[in-house]
Image 1 (cartoon, rainbow, N blue to C red):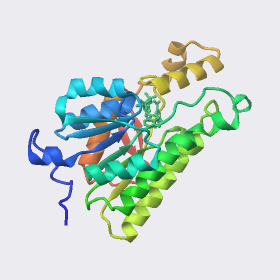
Image 2: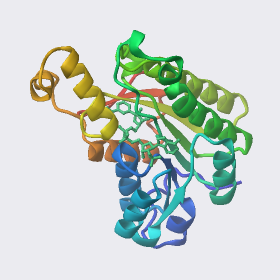
Image 3: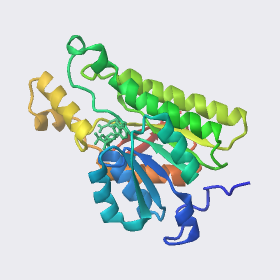
Length: 262
Ligand SMILES: NC(=O)c1ccc[n+]([C@@H]2O[C@H](COP(=O)([O-])OP(=O)(O)OC[C@H]3O[C@@H](n4cnc5c(N)ncnc54)[C@H](OP(=O)(O)O)[C@@H]3O)[C@@H](O)[C@H]2O)c1
């Protein structure tokens, strides 16, 4: 039986363990995913980062060296999920890739723009989660899926985004049930980050909500408390996958850190 991640992560940099643990992070080319890849690498893991923008991934490879394997691919493609899980046998999956919603009110969406987050975010979470259960990942493995605070609060300028992110939370909880029923020992957790202007996706959403409120971005943000940074997200996700005691099915993520949603 494969060894558990617990107690073995972070591994000693350069050790055999560090070379074999190979977390996969989707959407690693920028934003939260890039910061999560950097934090996991900093904790001693060899990280596999997936995104479509090969130039940005190459930049991250230049920064992190051979402790980072860039994979230029569509994370929502089922072949990508199956192929990379078979190739790297990851003990950690961070399902972070997500499409930027068009920031418009409901009636200015078409069905195609409304459902974009379903075709990318939900489809990607579905394929990777399914592959994690089917293979299955080794006991002690962890799958973290990026949902959103919008899954609880709604997101009226983002079309189907909030519903898509709520579905990712449900899907992750269903996978946790299946893991328990089959005795797989694989932990599945959804993380719901608070809206932040620190990433391209978040900055576009904040600009949209500020404009709708007739405010400039700085005034809009003033009363919202400290904004979550990408680095804080990287640290929090690395802590979550490292600590097997953090075994709740969903966590809210703010600048203050992770808070269990049960
Ligand atoms: N920022 C926020 O305020 C916020 C709040 C709650 C939840 N989230 C969630 O957090 C996650 C990361 O968002 P972010 O804010 O860091 O956004 P971001 O800066 O726009 O980054 C999104 C990442 O997803 C990748 N991506 C998109 N479609 C992809 C596809 N089909 N295949 C592979 N990679 C794909 C992008 O890479 P390529 O374009 O190179 O493919 C990029 O690396 C998303 O799931 C988002 O919904 C963000």
